[in-house]
Length: 499
Image (cartoon, rainbow, N blue to C red; front, side, top):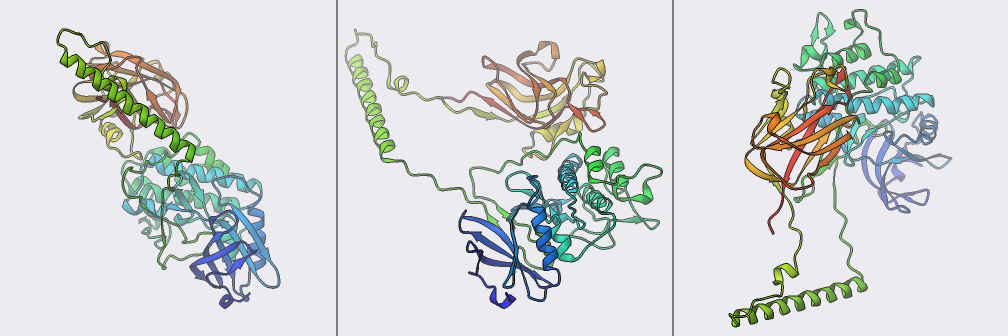
């Protein structure tokens, strides 16, 4: 099948309808297509008759299709015959690492969490003797479904004709370069990559992440050096396989979902066709796709009938209540005994979000301070930022104290119906919710507890609590990089709504 014969509207395998040409490079064309049977978008590669590596690409895609790790791009179909050759794979939407770094380096833990997911996925692929060999920022995507996706496994290398005698080392160095980029916003190469500037150099060697960006934890700096900066290892053993990289980052909190604002217009989400399954289109415009909320289903005839009956009953109840109240008002000597309409037709009022005026790291049993400089990050409304406690040697805070926490000052005494907190994804936290009108630990009352907590949790008092100060108090910490930490990405305090 010649390139000229493949146009929008062409159907392959009697189901994949080509719609938009995304990019072309060296005889390989990437399309956005529709799987007409499953009614979903897919990515399709087609090839010019003189493309020299069709067999290698189709073989690589067929092998990759047998992998089941959801963090790797899924291949649906691959075929080659006398008439045509094509590869059909998952259409991935989201933000590539290049996109995420447009505003500067990521929070170190978030960068490490993204790369840790990629390392685990590639470790699984290597067990099946499948390799990537050309990891770039465009290959690591945070999807619109809040998951990590590694694009182009095996297929991209076949498209580019890349081979190596040390595939494990090549992929490990690629993971190290991705971590370097996430920590610094620079690419450790001779020239810029994916819009990222080349990393600065010192005496002919790339600077380490900590030399480029302030605040990079020493452990992440060490992992990056061991993976991809041999000149700076200073006797430290190299990481040589994705499995070793995954093990080195195994205790990193995994990236938390980024909540989309709602209500409001759906955000525009950029796809990642640059090197999507191997086509490098760094100099071509990148299409965008819009997330569209599915239309609400229309109620069935039965549902509409039930709704009508309920409406009539409500109207009748209101009418009876009003008639009773009228009689009571007309007869001063007679006490009204019928409930009012507002009581008869009542609904639970939605809770109200309270805004803290200040947050502080709370350590009344130690040095009186617990990373206070990061406390405000837990209430800034950004799920990618967080407060983290000091590092402890054991889950029981090194037996130095009974707890540490994050203290919120609500500005004035308020009723607290519940507190929603987003913790790290690693289980093992024991958390208490304390409320009081004084920031003194002894004067605050414990109103809720949760053990083995992780991720998004809701701490709900048995009865509505009141106080100016709200304390999320860790009595046990989960394992984290280099020790044990309490981590809070986001906190939302609710009070009872008014009817």
